[in-house]
Image (cartoon, rainbow, N blue to C red; front, side, top):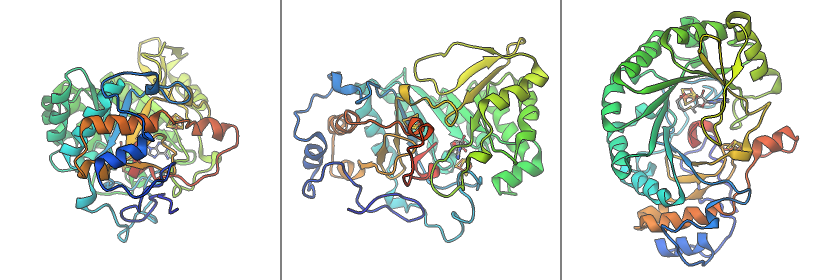
Length: 381
Ligand code: SAM
Ligand code: SF4
Ligand code: SF4
């Protein structure tokens, strides 16, 4: 069986299914493969809608492209994602109609939130149309976008009017030289991202900023970014450098823990007070200063949070992954291109989700994780 690690290759080969039946010839037979012959129960919430560890599916991360205009060393290091890297061809990308069918198929499972990501999602042409199409499905879905912010200023207003609720902007340095060094890019400045944040706020979008802190690279930026965000009243979340993919030369030595970052912040802002989570499964532990500035900490390495993980990921070519650190996924594109209905999608996802037992970060903490993993820029952060 060929494995689909999707590291630096073009379109992945056939996906590895946990159950192997003869090659399907139409959507119905793909569905039978995934559901192992169980009868469909679309629109009916059953105990099957939780996984083996009793976690519901509440959140989908939809990657709309595997391309990016940055080359952050922790995500797409240029030596692995250079000129000769073959990205997905246009014909392999899901269309917006196919993505919308997928999202519609997830609604009966209790989906509450869709996050559009990538690669850099704002590189996908006419992304606003996708936002509008998903918003039309459901007025109460929480619809968010994660972006490096380089192109946000020019799109923020139209994204908001199409129905986007929230945007998370990644920013690892406000010092421009360091910003460009970390993004391995000279086309954009840190001020472009700051402009994007301000324009998004002015447009009425809720904005958060994410900063990955990597030891030996940008600890110096913890306080400058925090101060820049306090001026804008934007919640800032610090992310521990994670061992996603296989190309970023991850080592524990480069992880700056949430605890260390809090202690740096406390030297300037005084004691940080914990805040209760907004909801079960919230990835960031939230704190605030005495003057109510909010900081979050995504401590995947030092405080894994798999126990509440309710996230499904869909790569830009329509493969679903049940964990950020997955090495295998389940292709949905063939079903979609053979005319699968939303009901078929519900059943297919339900079948996979009901067998899910991922808990990579907890296994890592217990020293049990050595497998090959899919790349973050492919699976969507
Ligand atoms: N290009 C967009 C961006 O940068 O926001 C969206 C995709 S990016 C893969 C999503 C998030 O993943 C970003 O906040 C990025 O900082 C984070 N990320 C990527 N690689 C990471 C790593 N090795 N450790 C921690 N966070 C990482
Ligand atoms: Fe691009 Fe985002 Fe990855 Fe940086 S983190 S290389 S901006 S996809
Ligand atoms: Fe979820 Fe996998 Fe991350 Fe655990 S390691 S929180 S299961 S994505």
